[in-house]
Length: 269
Image 1 (cartoon, rainbow, N blue to C red):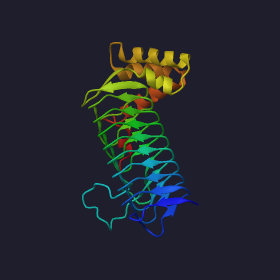
Image 2: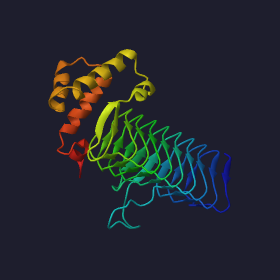
Image 3: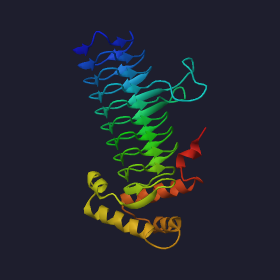
Image 4: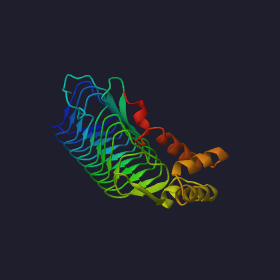
């Protein structure tokens, strides 16, 4: 087991370091943390208690990962949950990711994600895989971002929002309700669905038949007169939908169950 630990790094005695881990100057790793094989913690990185980081991650200088959530009344004696990060993630400078506010629960970051400079992920968020979050985007607590989503710079996301897979949010978007899969959104409070994310469809590996079905569903839902929800229900009643279209329909129906369009609010403590 080879490791490259700078002499100025501060690592708690019970930290588990995998093989070929690099820990840079003045980095701090708190007790109970687990760092997977081939992961690089650059200079001045802070890793909080009970944080689990997988293999082949690169965490750039001054990122703070797994320290106390920003909740009034919480202090160092408050029992909180953890943070679990998967494999092959790139976490750039000054990113902050908070652990769960609930003991025995976790904030979760999946695999193959890119979090650019100054991104913030609040407590109890779940990020799936292959997500790109651009500079200075702020994700409030309890949000879920599904596979392949791409968030541009300075996007702000309200708590309990779900961002659908393979969608794209334009810069400065302010998102306060759920976003269905495969769409492009822009604007704020509320954002507007503008088009289908063609690049997202390609990145998702959808067949031409599936892509055509998504475009046809988009036109039916958002390019006809009348309430969007009524057209979604009409599609649902047809049945036998291509899976990507079914995913869009399910997302919209789920969001409609909560008065602000945030399905996860239904499970608020």
